[in-house]
Amino acid sequence: MLYNIGDYKDHAKYIKLSLVKVEQLNATIKAILTISRLEESSNVEGVDISSLVSRIIADNEIWLKVANLQLSMSLKRRKLPCPS
Image: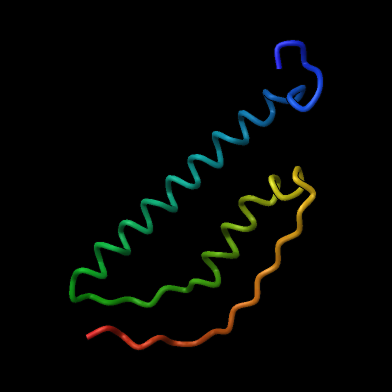
């Protein structure tokens, strides 16, 4: 990293991307915590898990490319019963 050679030669670029990803993960965690609090209350709302997972995959596409990985998703849409 110090001499800009090898795997870490583009560290400045990836540090910026990492900060963006950390902020996005923080927002996702906050959303999950909010959902958890809502589940404890009597107000139950549906959540589109498919779009949430799709967004997370899209947000992390750069890391998949860096690692030369491909990720696909296949979810069946169905309604889950509301807890009583």
